[in-house]
Structure formats: C-alpha cells, structure tokens
Image (cartoon, rainbow, N blue to C red; front, side, top):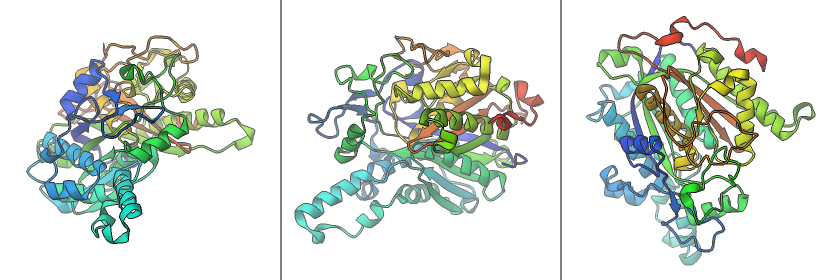
Length: 438
C-alpha cells in the first residue's frame, strides 16, 4: 500500500451475541460476558450441537424499515444496523457531505442462506408459482452492500468481498487501498454474517468442528484451553468508517486510530512435501510478517495480538506456533487474546469485531481477556490474558483472521493523536524486512 495518504478510523458499529450496540459489546467483552447459549431461532433438539451466538437483543426495526425487513435476510439486518451505529458514531448519521466520494466495501462469509432455505422449502412444497419475484435480489450475496449504499448515500462504489472468515479484514484492506489511492475520501467497510438457520447449522454440525458442550454453553468457546473441543458458530456484524486523514481533519472528526498495514495470503498446498500443519503455520507466519512490513513496523513494535483462535483443538495451536515463528522469544511477552471466547465465531464478522475491540483497547488501555481459560495446554503456552481484562498501554495492535481453505489475513492498526502525530515508538518506524524471512 502507498502510505502517503493515511487511512484513519472515525466511526465503529458492533452487533454481537453479547451486545447489540458498540458500548454493550465492549463492556461485555472486557468483563467476560458470554453471548453463547442454546439456539432459540429454530428447533435444535435433533442436532448434536445445540448452542450458538445469537444477537437476541437486536431490534431490527430500530434500524431497518418494515419493507426492507420483509424482503431481505438476517445478514442484511445485522449489516445495516452496524453501519447505522458506525455512521452515528462518526457524526455522519445526518448524511455524507459528498456521497460521490464515498464507497461501500463489505465482507460476507455466507450467502443469505436463511432466505435461500425459506425459498427452497416453499418451492418444494408449493411449486414455482409461489416464489415471489423480489426474492431474486434477496438471495443475492450483494444484497447487504446494496442496502448499506442506500442507507449511507454512498455513490462511488459498492463491493462485496466473499472470502470466508477473512472477508471482514479483507474488506478493510481494500477500503484502505481505496483511500490511499485517492479514489474515495470515505469508505464504509465491515462484514456481517448470519449462518444460524436449520440447514446451514446442520452443515456446520456435520463438519465436526463445533463444540458439543451443550450443557454449559457459556463455557463452550475456550480458545487455547486444553479441554477445548471445537468452536461455536454465531451471527454478528461490524462496521468501520474509514476516511482519509485530510477529510477527517477537515470536518473535525474524532479519530480512533490509523490502519497501518494489511496482508492476505493463501497456503502453498503441500509444497515441498510439507505437512498440512506446517503449511498452515508458515502461511500464517508469512501473513503476519507481510502485514507488519506493509505497516513499516517491526515485531518489537507490536503491543497486542487479537488472535483468530476459534477454540479449535488444532488451529489454536497452529496460530500459537506461527506467532512464535514471527516473534521469537518476544512471543512470551506480547499479550494475546481471543474475543471468540465471548462471542463465538460470527464467520466474516469476526475480524471486524476483533478490530473494533482492538481499537477500543488502544483507546482505553485495556486488553480484553480470553475467558474459559482454565486448563493450560502445554502446546499453547503464550500470555493469553486469561479470564480478566488487563491494563496495558497499546500503541500498535495486530489482528489475525483465518478462513477454511487456507486463507489468512492480518491487519495492523495504531493509535493516532489529535495533532496528527504518530504515537510512541511509531514516530521512529522504518521499513521492516520481517517479511523477507518467510
């Protein structure tokens, strides 16, 4: 990325299982309040896994008009709600000053599967004549971006990024490119996913990656813990308002922080006879190193790592090993935590909710904990900020995401003061050669 034009964050909006607006989400994450419970939106009595993260406190009609509510799926409702919160937070709720200079880039990991399932059931029971014409647009993965563009009045570009769990961070990365290239002054970016519907959830259950701790849902998501038995799927949305520093300064906007660097890579499948775990570890390490190189920071500059860590028995260890590859002995001195312990895994929305939590960590000097960390795993031996939040000055944070199929994304964000100066060590930053190691 060309860093000559700085991309800063001026608004955030979070919809999560443990909080249907940003302040509640942040308070819940900090204080270890879990949003995982028995699924209520459909009958799960016949499923081997019966828990998930539903945003039950969300009242869609507070954000979406009744016509849109009827004609779109759950992910659109989540997305629009998060964007309205972010616009309000950025003092843009009365409209963008120039919609022609604004774009929408939103990530999705799943299609609007709830709409598709409903239509398939109608078709199988009642035939073609019962399918309503407007359902074509409702089933379109692009539906969230269309709805957001109308809400925000953004006219420059509307794009959907569909890259699984990494789609949220990838949307932010593309948004930053748009700002730095001068093609947009404001980008509304983020991600939303709503995978909790009968058939979709059945597929997740069949994959074998979910926890079966049905009797104790709040304890089910336990990243890095020795007794973890799988992740917990959930719904959610996160939105950021990105602006060029010039645009944000001109309107006197409050700045949460700056996006310093981004990288996304895929595994070289079985290269040189390596095992799948070796390939995963190397790809994740390469991704983190490339993001730091793009940000022009070194491993010594990273104050906090927001881990992908979905509570998977294998992948939590792979991410731990990749951190050790990149940071060496310093790995043991960097706080690492996973907010998925509180919110489960809302697929593409996870990376953006992690970014929002990391920004608020920078603002407040508080690191959210990894809850349910009760039995240390000898293979996962870093500082995971167990069970209680911690005071810590944070100038630069690294956010990680991983998607099925071997995709990895990392984002580097940093503090920024009202005078437009880089804080702390970053005023001495130089181009890092960290990526050359991998």
